[in-house]
Amino acid sequence: MTAKRLLLLGPPGAGKGTQAANLIKLLGIPQISTGDMLREAVASGTPLGLSAKAQMDAGQLVSDEIVIGIARDRLLKDDAKRGFILDGFPRTVVQAEALDELLEQSGVSLELCVSLTVDEEELVERLLKRAEIEGRSDDNEETIRTRMSEYRAKTEPLTRYYDKKGTLREVNGLGLVHEVADRVEKAIGGRP
Image (cartoon, rainbow, N blue to C red; front, side):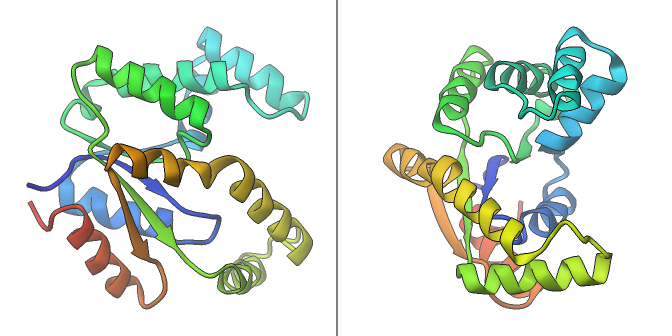
């Protein structure tokens, strides 16, 4: 059986967005990313969106409470009922526990956490190349390494969280896009 309620996990530059795009086509389910959820909530002017905007405008990270509320609103939409690919949420164990509660209230659970693993030096190289191609002057080696450190401290513990639940599948994120896609498809149970 092919899993359809998925979390893609991995450090910046691991290829989550690329692999999510492949899974969207393969499974016909939406990608739900934190950035998209926040932008949609802000644009819609929802109370949570307005709170998120105020925090972002003040240069703060959006609180767990707001991110969880926005995720709850998004996961309750009709297109997510057949499945979803989470990208960027949850970012912390607190958010993962809230996600479990939310899904349980809906009578479902997260089926699989696919963690893309890539050597940090390779990631730094990838992100520096991407920054050069896309003209991202804010992506220099120092900021990239800071993001990696932040990922290790706050998000990497999710691999242990999902491993304990028996839903973690680690996938080697090195190689050509189609090679990684084949590994991800195998991890989720193959093509539907």
